[in-house]
Amino acid sequence: MDNLKILFRLYRQYTKMDLLWFLRDTRYCLLQIFSDTVCAVCTIAGVFLLSEKFGGFGGMNQGEILFMMGFSTLVDGIYMMFFIGNNTSMISRIIGRGQLDHVMIQPVPLWAELLAQGFSPLSGSSMLVCGIGLTAYAVRRLPLSATLPWLLLLLIYAVSSTILVLSVMVLLSCAAFYAPAAAEEIAQTGRDLFTSLKTYPLGTMNHSVKRLFLTVLPVGLAAWFPSELLLKAGNGGLSAVLLLQACYLPAAALALSLFTIYVFKKGMKYYAVNGSPRYSGFGHR
Image 1 (cartoon, helix red, strand yellow):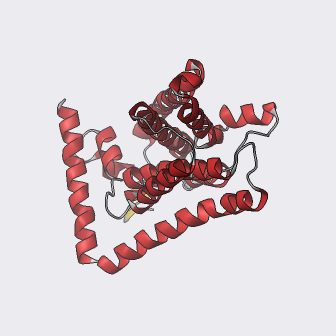
Image 2: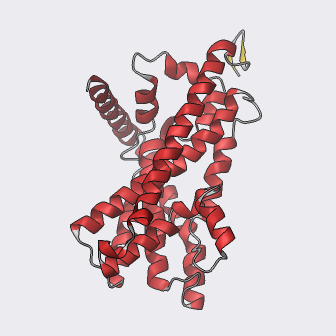
């Protein structure tokens, strides 16, 4: 309970810092918000235009693809709001640049600082707003029954997909404990993998490729798979979704996050013994 109080106090402090940036440097803060909005539009534009050209593809019609785009943007929005600040999501940069000590010397638990330091409720909220708006618009266009249980399922899947994406990035970032210079930007590689592939529907792909994108390279779990289940639940009720299917994404996100924590702790033990080779007599890097 005390640790949760610490976490919420940290969230309050980072909210205050984000607001102060907006008040003191409004121009550049608005430029960042506008840039994030443009990025959100560009990310989904290619797939959406393809669906308009061909009347849908990948086993989804135009409205269903629009819903998947909204869900994808919603996941990106949660990621941006909670983890984009201070390179939190790109933790390979923190580890690789020898800056993990800057986090460890804070008088709070390491996990609490890592969870809170990326929180940007003002400057990082534009993509989340776009995701909510696009998802709501898609739901209105489709014959979906947006009941309270369905909305709760939407929230669970959006959070699970965000945890999954973040877990993959942190798992890759653990390589920076052992090869700091070479793996400094490896988290961006994991991010690019999801950004470039997660918005494509996988319905008409062969089963081998589909299984690959739902297990080893779980890009299908970031948007397509949960969107399929939500569309099915919205049309036929929650009973239309098999229990194993419904639980697969949250279970996969939980399992991957636990494995990532284990690997990260192993990396921390290595870091405790060897430190960062990127420190010199006049400072890090």
